[in-house]
Image 1 (cartoon, rainbow, N blue to C red):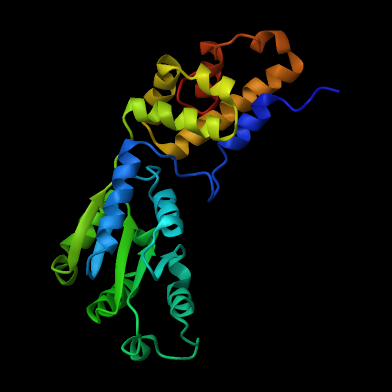
Image 2 (tube, rainbow, N blue to C red):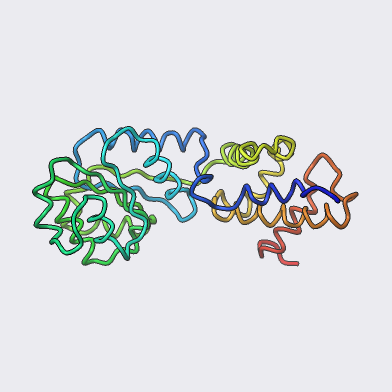
Length: 256
């Protein structure tokens, strides 16, 4: 019986999970350093922004897990904001949040993912909480919402820093693909993604990690099928262009 296809393992490398999303390359390390510098200073509000799929969520998760700064909390659901913030601060559910903030002995920093989904009322609560100087907030949101938020008069003077994330350039994009495969111990496959093949994918995904993960997952799904049913067609030491094109057609990037 044939062992599990190497392409099956490669597919799993591009499933988005909390553990596997952050890949180290120059710009990512720069964003991480900006976050580290930020939490060392007193601030009320800060913003992390960029287009969807650029890796904001994975950056925040990695930072929360690795920072040496005390009392840093990541909140991922706007729908449970008050519940989650009370839990993080050890405040009972039936106690008033604003009334108990002044009694805190330590300063806390909250990283709010998907902040563009927060309602105006919740954003106003965040502003009031930040004014107590007991809590600091970093809001992660999409670029257009960043412009709208910073235009609000009562937010404008309170925003201490803005960190802008951008899509990676092609060399970093290639590193991203290769490191994802290397982390899965798929050295041979990682070596097959030279600049030419990485550039093909980059042309369509524009460096968007979410779309790139989908592209690579589908590409390896196609290769797995051929590896099982027509193994002689995938014995090349390169990823053949026809498979990249098949994937691009499947995902709607190329008209068949």
